[in-house]
Image (cartoon, rainbow, N blue to C red; front, top):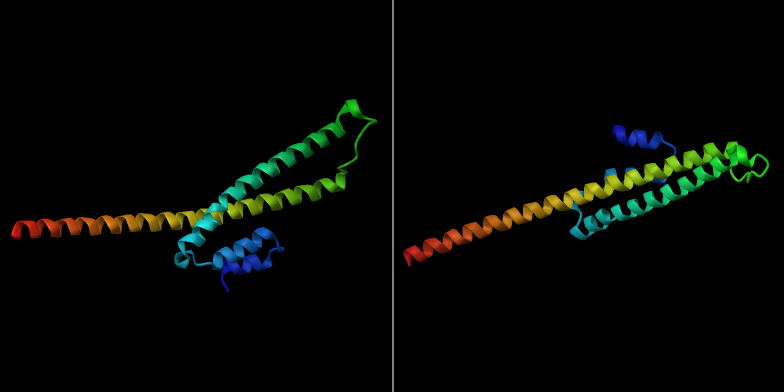
Length: 142
């Protein structure tokens, strides 16, 4: 068992922990281009999730600020009690961790895909150069 496996197993189960666990075991080097493209496209999911989380967090902040405002001493909504705040903050932290893991996995896939493309272009250029050299030699000797 690797150190990273041990640390994942000792964690409290979470969506980010599951994604990290699977990503560490997924061999991107042997994945197809379409599989890598799917994973790389998940960056959009992370962007959308981060934007949504930002909106919700801002709204919650406004709610808390409104409830604590001196102007509204008697008209508090009570929607978010003191005990609920720590639970909410832990939930937000879990969402941020998940978004970060999605970004890490998608970035790894995109990097692997980009390296493949560069290697293919280099190989294609190498073949083209050697093909041109061979054609030039035939023309001179022909």
